[in-house]
Image (cartoon, rainbow, N blue to C red; front, top):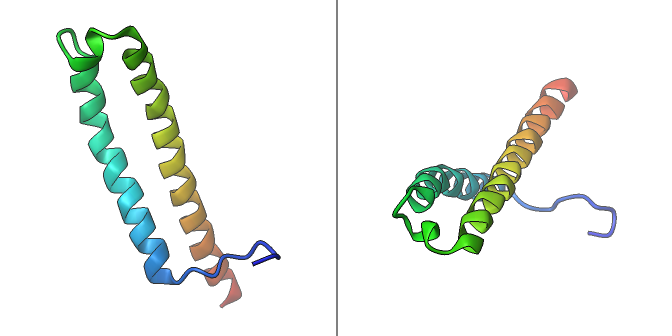
Amino acid sequence: RSDGQSIKSDKENMFEGLCICTLALFWIPTLFIATTPGGAADQVGNAYFFIWGSSVVVTETCSWWVRDWRMAIHDVVRMQ
């Protein structure tokens, strides 16, 4: 919409959040396995920094979704 309001349904929002949180939870062990000595990112320097940098993006995306979800709940409670 042009006014910036989301037109997604609750099911779409919950599915999106479930996917984001699941991927973030799987990213944590992947990060540690790949960056340990002998891991896949240990041999390639740029991969090591890319994995750690992308972990910041994954964590931020997950925390933004949780914040927006909690804000939506708060708005509903305030309207009642």
